[in-house]
Image 1: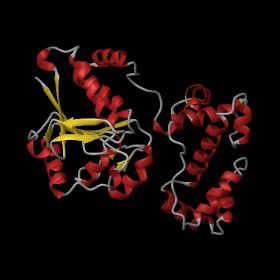
Image 2: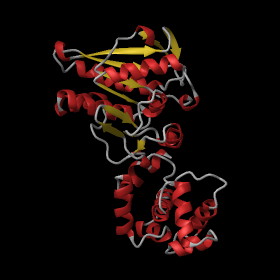
Image 3: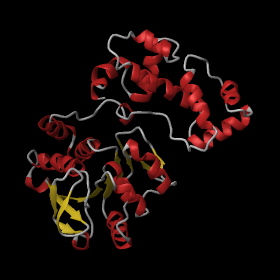
Image 4: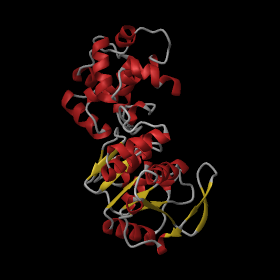
Length: 321
């Protein structure tokens, strides 16, 4: 049975959000019998050519008003300006309906914004590009955001992190549909991993939460960065904020959506990632400077938070900055 997949596009769409998944499913067709292949439908706001965020021109196969009533999967692509765009009630009403009628639906990158505006994410586990986590949380407070995942499946909802993570998600879907061997064959053709190590935090410039500038917690965050080698207990942080320990913990959780301990740990990892970009620094030196007990402790925290060791980070990711 042919599997029909719709990719939702718009002016300013991220080209790789579209071409990455399309290439995965198109390449898969070369390994599948005719009756099991994918049919790809690029659905736009209107018919005709549209300009991607990088200037590439692509053509939607059809406007949403002429799309199928349902698909095997509907995937909303993302784009740099998407969180601030509104495509109108008619489009979101259509998107809500077609996703409800389809077997699966989801998004690539911040395409999750479209699903949120269509009322499809309340109470669901989702991810998105690390840079758009805060805006998605504001747009849909009822969504359960898993910010560090490359992709998340919540029943029939599939969402991915930023840009190239759409390829990871598509390979995952392909593996579900036709088995891991077909996914591996396609991954080899595209020269990518079938399953990457770690989450998207290893690619983001920071792990620490964004805090409103008016919050008294901002001063504490600066204090933490200046005293990473200290124990940084709750009482010490509360004193820096000029609050009682109990009130400090409450305000900190309210303004950062995390705990003081998690914040401190994230700050130490951020500082260590910056230091690891300096060639020749011993791991134990980095660990001491950033407040870890020793290099083994730092490695344990890196593996838990990033999915890679400090040495792997240095080898594979420092060159990206």
